[in-house]
Amino acid sequence: MNWTEWFQEHGPGLLLYARQWTPSRTEAEEALQDGFVRFWRSRAARDGTGGVPSDTDLPRLFVAIKHAAFDRGRRRRRRHEREAAAAEQLYDRNGWFEATAPGAERARRIGQALGELPAEQREVIVMKIWGGLTFRQIGEALRIPQNTAASRYRYALAALRRELQREDATR
Image (cartoon, rainbow, N blue to C red; front, side, top):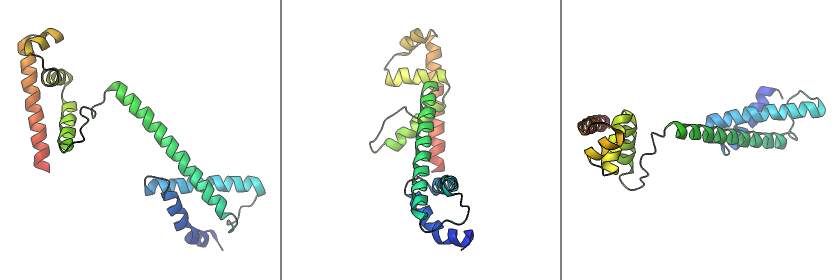
């Protein structure tokens, strides 16, 4: 049996096995490749063979694929945690609302639109709507004239309205 025949026979089962440990087909294919390389290196180091794997090698190949999938998953989670921590330190634009009610999609869209506003408009919106402050109090807190706070609020509301209407139109 040559490599092509061997892979045609065992490849689909190995890919299906890798797929159960990975979030996507692409990840499964990469885990399959990583596992196979890992298996091949250990086999070559162990007995110096370079031929097509035998049926007795197949269980070790399954184990190597599973370990490769787990390693890829760990690396992906660690990378995601690092990126999330870095993004949180810089600015989390998607975490404005924690809504699980029927309006969750609308809240997500509002939060996303809010994150798109310039910082000075966003802070006035948050202070006014969620903080309940008056324009005078906002002006004092930000050391800007009360009329500037009011105009930033109006500009922000107009921008939010346009963004949400644009999204509604594309749906």
